[in-house]
Structures are given as structure tokens and as C-alpha cells.
Image 1: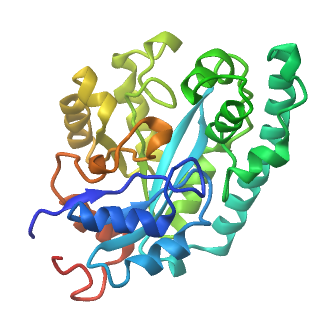
Image 2 (image 1 turned 120 degrees about the horizontal axis):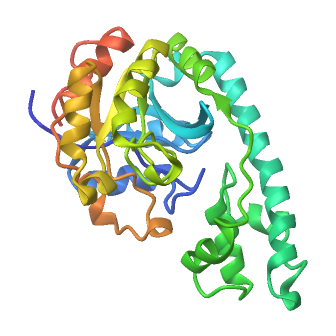
Length: 303
């Protein structure tokens, strides 16, 4: 198989990304990317547009999602990849819609809290309706940050997070990882743990008491629950020299190693030329297809 560039962890306007799903396909094609998956937070809403845009692009595209899940006493992000939209079971669609509702309730509570702590002259100006206008789908903190910039409360979204949205964040009650893994596997999906060594939503977090020596035991436990992969090649892992550690861990526990840029666009200060620049081969794809039950001959022909 020819090695193709891939981007299998990215976000659209349906969660907290800058670009529409079809625009992401266009950026991928311009960048020479051959394999793509859309993984918006807790929603499938952008996938029909994404898959339709990919049809005549020469890009092999497949549906995905990034689900916030509860594991032990902390939260993780679970990437999940599927053969097709048709393979997604109705029970999974329904459960994801409930997660969307939970995000909206959390946003109401977060806005109420922010209106209590911002400078007095701005109090009451942050409204749910205006924050929602900034989002095509699932509401997330970047949408609130942008509204705070628009109102002049802060000068940038970065300041919004640094001064308010981290300190005063409200954690919603998330799906338990066992239930999430079960539903994904029932849809013949491939569950992959996102950025296991990142600063938040990660297995490794020394600030929270989760040290490197604790990670293998957690990986072993998660594999027993149905986890199939680890996102090993990731910007923060590269920055901290953890890529090889996670690749070795994936090999030790026979997990599928993946990698990504976790592309959002301007919400994480990423330019479009970064999409698809992860330094990895495409050997993960045949392993995905084994889980999916193989695909028709020619479906993954080199682009």
C-alpha cells in the first residue's frame, strides 16, 4: 500500500472548528491528503455533508466522532471510527443526541456563572441565544469565548479561557467509558483513546496525580473494556518527547497506533497548511478495516 497523508482527528463548525465539513475536504484535497475522518465533539451532525463532499474528491473518507467519557474519577476523549453512516446503530445516534442536550444545559449554567464574574458593566450581556448563533451544532466553550470577544469583555479567545473559562468551567456529567466502548463496538466501530499524554482529558497528568508509571495499567484495563487504539503521534506528545513512549505502549498491548493534528483551525491557532502533516504511515487503515469487516475491493484504491 502506498503511504498516504491522513487527518483522522479534526473538527468542523458543527462542534468547535473553524471550517464547514465540505471545506475540510477541500483543504485536505489541496494539501494532498488521501485519508480523512471528521471527529466533531459529541455529534454526528456534520457527517452527511462531510461524506457527500468526499465522494468525488479522491479522498478515502469515513465517519468519526470524539466523545467525552468518564473513566474512574476523570474525563477522557474517545475517538471512534466507523465504516459508513449506515453502520451506526440507532441506539448510538440517540445517545449522542442526548449528549448534545447535556452540552446545551451545561452552556446555560456556564453562561450564568460567567455573567456573575465578568466586570459589572458587562453582566447580563452574555446570552445563550447569541452564543448559539456562533455554533452550527454542538455548543462548546470556544463559542462562548468568541461571544465574549465580540462583546468586548476580553481581547481574545485565549484571554477568555485564561481568565474565565478554565477557572469557572462547569463539567457536565459524561457518558461512562464502558457504555461508550460497548456502543461503538456494537456498531463495528474502532474506539481510539485521544491524546493520552496531553495536559487535559488524558491518562498521563502528573498535576492530577496520574504519573507515567500509572499509564500502562490503565491502558490494560481499557483494552479489557474494548479499547482498540491509542493516538500516539500528537502535537503535545511531539513537544514533550512522548511519541515513542506511546508507540511502544501501543505495540506492547497490541493497540492500533494512530496520529493527528487535532485540526480545529483558528480556534486553536492552526493554519490550513497543518492539516494532514502528521508524520505517520497509513498502516492503521487495514487494521480499522479488519474491525469494520473489510470493505469492497477497490474502495481504498490509492488516490
